[in-house]
Image (tube, rainbow, N blue to C red; front, side, top):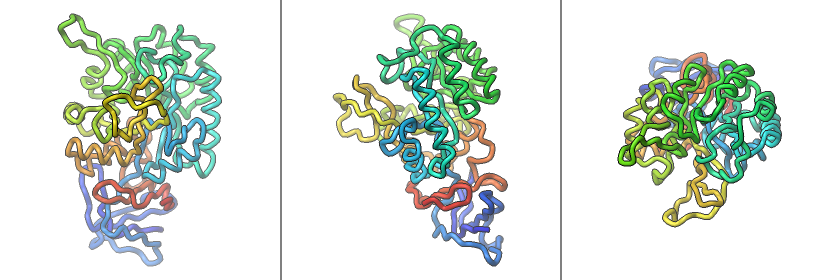
Length: 380
């Protein structure tokens, strides 16, 4: 048994200062205030020195890490993210690749998942294949502009299998339900997300019974459907805000460029504490920095000069969220651990609770990561 002492435990809705936490065989076995919770003899001791101990971060939307694409160098991307506190990451594949390329990319990641270096890769977030070509980076190279075709998408579904935890799609695509039903055959519990889309509320809500419960990078790469030139329409963002059962992903960069800080505060107010999910959307696009973005260091741009994801890690996104919205450390751990775990169906992680995986981070009040523990083993 291992005991982490002198810790301030970050629970789902409160703190436990001067606490101790026990873990054994990769599982959290108990915790409490040190004054009331004696440490058994023979325990291996980790001294948190008064720092915060929270659940490991869960990044459900991440293409890369440290300049390495998951589809190309998955072990390096995984280890980079692990060192920054992300104990569970969904490797994200993108819709600028054709069917054969997506299959090969998936094979590469799946091979890494079986290695110690890929131990924190928990599956796929499939930001492919069927979204709206009008909305998204590298749109000129999109090979999925034509009609939805089972012969093209089925090899991808078959390869990712139950490793696909989320499929992003544009509900306005003709015959999208055919794809949804075939994806569910391989994984009946898979989640769907609306993204890179200009779907109407009705088109989005029609897919909720089939598992649509996430809004991909909320307020980014979505369209508008104005009824009249002088009036604001309702589209993807409004639908995500309105539906209580849809999680809203948010990219929280340092300047509030993906999501304006005022919008971040509004989303937090509208979605509440349980349906907001922080993501990194980390990428390796290296296009030219357009005018007006000089000095911005945590965004990526494609070769057309459009924003194409970020260079964030999730603990930095948490720090930015605290800065932009006044959220507490308890809040950001919920947004970056518990909520994303629940969004994709990971019932064994995401908070400090007896019986859950001992995926933990030790950090200071600004989310600077000091130590990372995965399944009870110290990784940093």
